[in-house]
Length: 410
Ligand SMILES: C[S@@+](CC[C@H](N)C(=O)[O-])C[C@H]1O[C@@H](n2cnc3c(N)ncnc32)[C@H](O)[C@@H]1O
Image 1 (cartoon, rainbow, N blue to C red):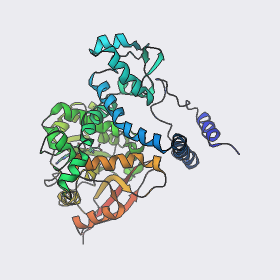
Image 2 (cartoon, rainbow, N blue to C red):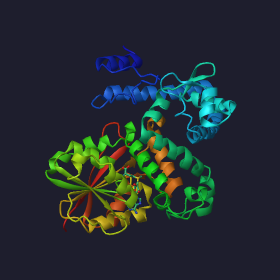
Image 3 (cartoon, rainbow, N blue to C red):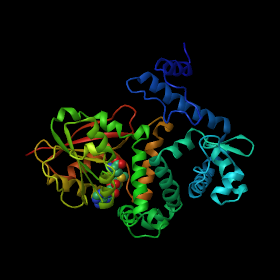
Image 4 (spheres, rainbow, N blue to C red):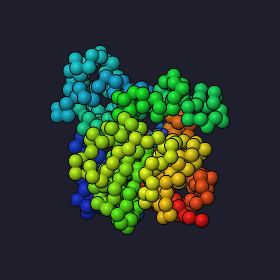
């Protein structure tokens, strides 16, 4: 009987795929296992089992030390981002610590400490003593703007926020207000994250880039939305992307389905950024409209209103308010699609990492949470009696599900 490793290797060879590696020319992600349940199950089993094996071989004392040391991983990453250390190392040939120091204005010894910490996570490495080269992970950040934005948002905004979580939970207890957050304490603001960003265009543009980066994470990729719903069957249809940021998902939908007209709604500056970068061939089919989703929906009678990663940012009460503002614009047959995690208990800890990160992140940034199917159903029935949750589609390999809600004339 072939080992799991043989099975996966054979599959990679049969697809002519490149072997995974840590070298900087490696593929950005493991090849898509769509339609290959045996391979995907094998991959997940290896990930979970090797992680458990590693923890057994370390023993509980060292596992605890590793968990506590995680904050230092983030501290090192924050400094690497802050001092632009990745950009100071050429993709071709690398650089010595002395050369990096001359470029970024930080002492050689300090850079060495930061880089050596990052290298444990296989981000940068010393190919020979005192000479640093990129790895697959660090090269991906340098080459890809949205991944760099994603990285920047994590280390500069989420990391300081995390340090305030216990204080926020103590202070705000059962509050569900979006202003009562660890983020607010960390950044000394009474605004919500989104209000804060709207006042700071550079940070807002980076956040939009970060969301684009999230949209490329294999488990929460926006391609699950593009391929996971029967868009072609809608015929000529208008799709409103509520809270669509700079429109990256709508652009991909428009490119894949010529039958669709897309309307992207968000805060004004996100909308302006999206309109400015729209490919010219899509200007007749992708529109940008500034809109606050707590106000009545301005696009009346669209076939679909899609909210990707929106309601998980808000309490149940606010999610109900957001959905109600759409109901006023719906016609019989219109659908609301919520693209969200539907939380279910998992016996595979490593496979639910993305879900666990997002859940805690929603708590600390926005005093919100990811939800189970029954919690989503409660929100839908509280929003309006004309609404019915008609199906939940969970695309292969996707952390997100597409929750379809239909409007029925009673
Ligand atoms: C988590 S992001 C999701 C963005 C995008 N839908 C995606 O799939 O990545 C939430 C989005 O909601 C937008 N947003 C927050 N509050 C809003 C409001 N009151 N009205 C309109 N958009 C809002 C933010 O600017 C941001 O683009």
